Length: 134
Image (cartoon, rainbow, N blue to C red; front, side, top):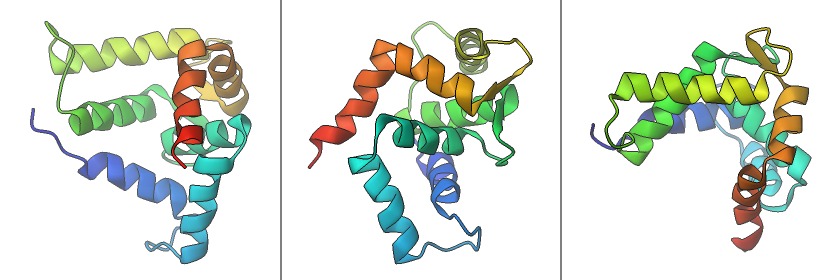
């Protein structure tokens, strides 16, 4: 699989194009950059949730999670060793849903997402990386 940032970039763009007009204003760009660099953990998690909530309906479905995970694998240009791409993605999505979908209704709400992420040390460390950029 060749590394490609196209699909992931598309999802990031859509998450920061707040008025959904197909272009980014300077204000949209700066507001989102400010959240990622100087926002609270909750603000960063809300931004991340909006990235995964592709259709903006307030919850993340397995299909949305699969699309984002696929885009991340394409961006990284690799699949875990010994795995077929489709199987690796499916397993990753299932693990994430087992961890985050607290009421087992097949979707992850913002509250479930934030609760899980704030309790997970590796996720908290990943978010803290933005604090050290500038």
